[in-house]
Amino acid sequence: MNHYKLPEQRDFEHRIAGKNTHLITLENSRGVVVALSDFGARIVSLLVPDKYGTPTDVVLGFSHIQDYLTADEQYHGVTVGRFANRIANGRFTIDGETFYIEPNNGPNALHGGAAGFHKRVWDRRVVYKEKADFYYVAADGEEGFPGKLSVMVKYRLTDNNELVITYRAQTDKPTVINLTNHAYFNLNGEGNGDVLNHRLQIQATNYLPVDEFQIPAGVPAPVEDTPFDFRTPKLIGQDIRYADDQLAKGNGGYDHNYILDTEVLAKKLPVATAVSPTTGISLDVLTTEPGLQFYTGNFLSGKDVGKRGQPYGKHGAFCLETQHFPDSPNQPDFPTTLLMPGEVFQSETIYRFSIVK
Ligand code: GAL
Image (tube, rainbow, N blue to C red):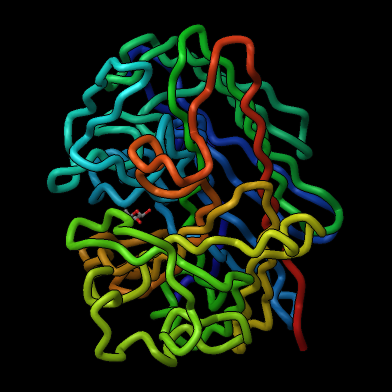
């Protein structure tokens, strides 16, 4: 199999909807390299030295921008918005007015609609090797959402092997917002089979069971005595094939929002940690968001072929998407996702890498 290498800049230079696209590379002093594209303000590659010092690409993706246009829509590495995750029936109400997002996932609106932020070419401002800021202004009514929304997503790579992602947004009318990154991680290296051998810990006592359309149904449930309990580290594969109604509703795996424990959030400790026993690469996730969608790539079908020519099959990656809870605009008991004019939306997530020997 080929070695991991960064995609070529020229293979990401293209024109989409009248705007030029680029590949931007950040690099720290410890050999971590991140490649980003302004198409979807997305992560394309993330090279991390493994326990032998060999650069290992730990995210799924493609080596040509065209592949992102023709691949199955899996949201590879993208910034998801204006509203990450599902809105039931694509409908919600603000101040008595109902808004409608065209359903693109069964009866639901998923990830901001068919032409959400992941399909947009963002403006960019880059500080050589160190950071890249992306800007996008979503029009009032775009994909059905109210309010002109100015959004900024900043990626910064530190010498502590942290990829810090900061979000900021302002609106001119009341709207709803939920932003996340949709990187597919495989800490064994992209294309190296499934992630079932990874050890995972999630600091959540409760999660949100879903209905047949993957909308949170009713009240949060304790993870205790269910396959959803990752409070003590365990292998992703340990219980994934357990005969469990919720795993079935997740299409044969995890695809659920965890309610992160508030003490862990308050102490700014990692809310999740994943470790590959083969590479020794460990990923800590830190966030200011209250929820974490843990998704085990259940819809990856093997149809898409990645950066080194390997097909991306079921469970070939996991996503740890920091966010507010799914369908919040329709669930009054959830923390609000309303953003009002004059307010500033702010959120931060850190993906931090280290080696476990
Ligand atoms: C995830 C979502 C999954 C699936 C995936 C994209 O965020 O939870 O159900 O839609 O995105 O394929």
